[in-house]
Length: 127
Figure 1 (spheres, rainbow, N blue to C red):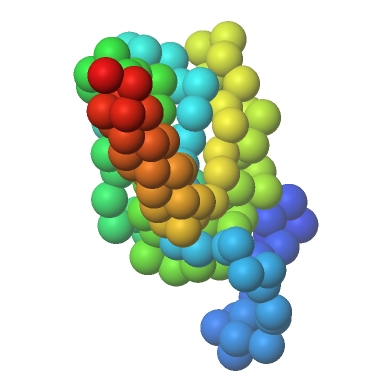
Figure 2: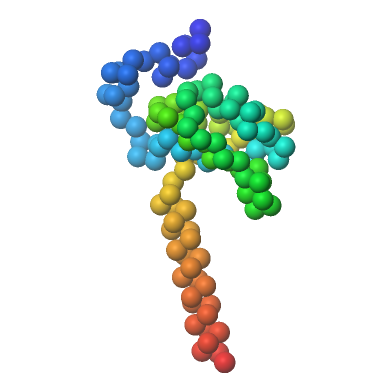
């Protein structure tokens, strides 16, 4: 019954190697809308059901509370976790589980840096 619900677990490593994954799929997941009081043990209980976890980082300051990063050992385990945990209810909150995309984060940081430079130039020219 377990393998019927989670078909990637039932596949052999050889069969997995022949599957083509979308380019955004990676081992690192970004989780939003977590309960603020969730512990790392609870995170391991929830996300560990889908495979070996290399690292979990939970946001602790005011800007990152309710978020976490989970890094799996295997990309197929991460895909399975996203497929099954996105929208999962934890303590009355529905999780948002996304693949972490460094390029998008870097692009946002670059845009903010350029905007700051533009604002500085405007302030300098308006003196």
